[in-house]
Amino acid sequence: MAELNAMAIGDLSGVSGTSALPVRAGLAQPLAVTQAEAEKIRAIAAAKVDRAGQLPGLTAGGTVARWARGALSGCA
Image (cartoon, rainbow, N blue to C red; front, side, top):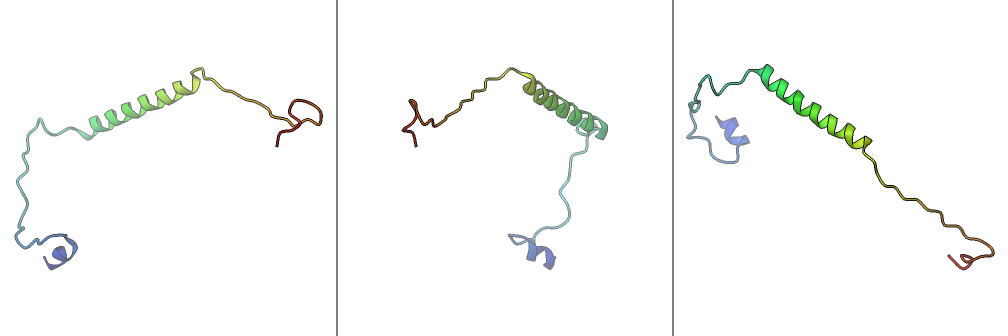
C-alpha cells in the first residue's frame, strides 16, 4: 500500500478491495463484433479519402518574369 500511496496523487489508505461491477449479458459485446464495427468505420473513412482524391478541384498558377524591355522592367 505504501507504493501505491507514493505513486498516487491522493491518500489511498482508505481504499480496500474492488468496487462491484454489474455483470449482465446485455452489457457485454463479443470482441468479434467490436472488431467488425471498427473495421467498418475504418473502411468508410478510407472510402471518403479515396473519393475526395477523385473529386474535381480548382488550381491556379502564374508566372512572373522580369523583362529588359516591357511593362515589368521596373519590378524588383
